[in-house]
Length: 132
Image (cartoon, rainbow, N blue to C red; front, side, top):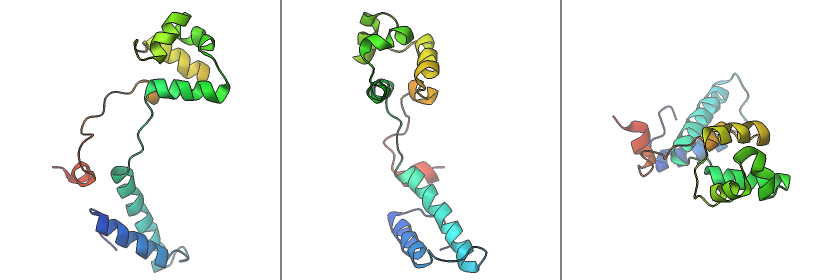
């Protein structure tokens, strides 16, 4: 396959071909083809099957579970216990100060806490890739 993967059928064909030449030695024509196929497959999968970041509250709760933290343990990052409760229930948005403290103190990636609503979320994968 030496063309972009644009459809599910193209994707399935690329997977079959990659499986056929999976043991190809690097530097051979089949090794080069496999490397190209893997790149094409990964690109298609990134767009067709995106893995969305968790919403900020889910990420905070996940980190709390990982580290065995209780709501009161978030007071240094978010504010008083009432504010922590409001943030975790979705009643209160995170401020930039809270985000900075959560990033530095709990290691939650900033891109998770700073997320904006996704535009074009309802588009099909092929429309996202090949829209003009």
